[in-house]
Length: 363
Ligand SMILES: *Cc1c(COP(=O)(O)O)cnc(C)c1O
Image 1 (tube, rainbow, N blue to C red):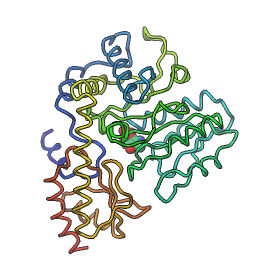
Image 2 (image 1 turned 90 degrees about the horizontal axis):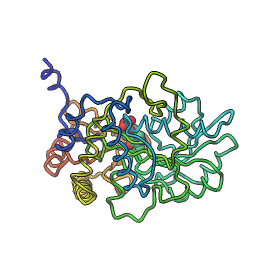
Image 3 (image 1 turned 180 degrees about the vertical axis):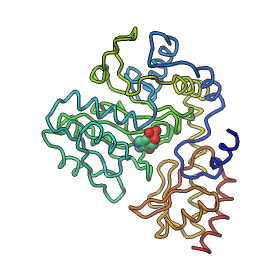
Image 4 (image 1 turned 90 degrees about the vertical axis):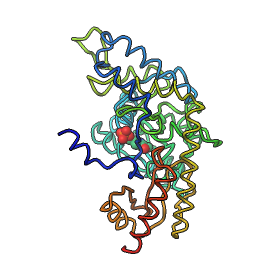
């Protein structure tokens, strides 16, 4: 019966817009080994808790701060909520607000609603990066933090984090960098951008192993510059041996901890570099093939995300979906959006382009 349900899921080989992918085989193996652990009770699951500390150190190392403090969360959404929560709790102003780019992920809207923090949205420039001048304009005495995105969900664009870091220091507000997607991509591209803890103004970062980290779902990660942020999140846990808990969820898996550890150890930074390089080759191939059909990218792809200008994006998306293909459509600018994850190879692109030709004849 389960197999029958499962068979209705669209296979990854036809999904060209997911930020998740088929986990690495070593991740699946590690996941199963830790299937019964509960990190909500770290005094019992001591080995799992130790492993989590080690994974946090390894991810911190990737982001220029091996002493960063944090934990493996359920995903980027929880990580973003927790960052805003820590900022709010530390700043203690009456009517807190946070300034995010217009391109920010919708998880910040959830954070704002749950935490009663006003989410102010700053304009983007012509290249879809946040306009730092507009961020500055929106900061006032009640601003507890600002957010920059390193790898926007829609376009894979990177905000000017260096300038945001300067601004955060100057105005004495926290800076959260959401690199849920880009965290496992940017370090492996030969880009000359600073986006992580090496910038003094960066207080916290979101990075999702269950996206380009090839770990199993669920595995997100929130990292803070130091322990004080975790302390601001802690609640007392009277009926456990450990006294305090800073995670948002109570009972929580160690599967993501184990699968992230396994992939990072197995691939190493060099292995990730190869994965990213391959995704970029396929991304460029997609740009070339879509170019043959007359499509132009909104911005030259920086990472393995690419959008093509298209007035009929929604009709085309719907028609493709009817034929069993998944791409996404975005409104502003109107475009077809692709995420070229490791499961999207040259052959998938060729098959897709053939279907695209049929769709274009119809739409
Ligand atoms: C995917 C994504 C998120 C949300 O992560 P989930 O794991 O889906 O909760 C947040 N921010 C950015 C930039 C993302 O791409």
